[in-house]
Length: 327
Image 1 (tube, helix red, strand yellow):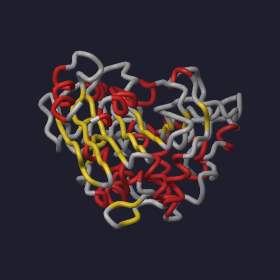
Image 2 (tube, helix red, strand yellow):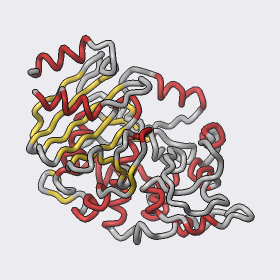
Image 3 (cartoon, rainbow, N blue to C red):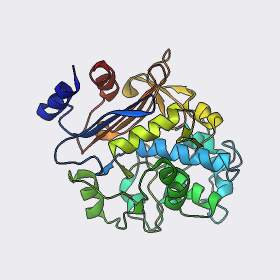
Image 4 (cartoon, one colour):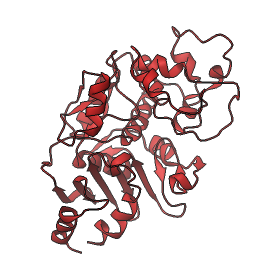
């Protein structure tokens, strides 16, 4: 399949590819494919959903590299000296940053209380209220989009600046990604529109009433931005002759920490990044609607794909390998 055939396939798709907005492919540090569909231009940003988590892992790494976060084994609660721990709660004192990054932090309740957190005045502190519980630290993988919100507040407290400013200065602008602004509205109606609206977005990041960005979703980037981030990961933190992150952090972030079950495609998990295959040097930051940063060290390729809201898309890695990279 050549480039024209790939463009036509996505254009005419009525299946899983019918929501794709942008595909960008870097090979050997150069753009070799960069196309847009469905009224989007290459510079139009898209809500990348849970790929945001992968970006948060990079920001945590920058904070560690700079010595602003001492270690991933630091206790989470130490970064929130003003937080009042709930009476009787003991487990929260043992939760580390590593637990957040590997999704092995314990939380109260059997499901994520979206309404409670996302209608509160401070989403980070509302998420902290969920952290801990009577079972203690079990090491069990528990995917928690609301729980990872704690990481945004933690980075802000560690760095002394808003997370979006830290991201702009240390990651986005050095990579040639446009400066981002906070979204600025967090009403129930706006949250629904943010997920469901299929039009282009600004270079923005969703935020709570405290102007703290959402750590688990809500960052808006282009396919080119995603591929560029992937190329930096591929090159062990280096981009444009500059070391954005240490190679040590990239290696630590992508090292598998836990084997996931069938629900997550039996992939392995590092620090908010997936390793789809145990025997191949391939890594991915994956989000709903098929948004993805795909990094293939064997082929020296990175791919960024954006897509508007469409539930239950789980095949983007296979689509990249069986269709895009076969060109």
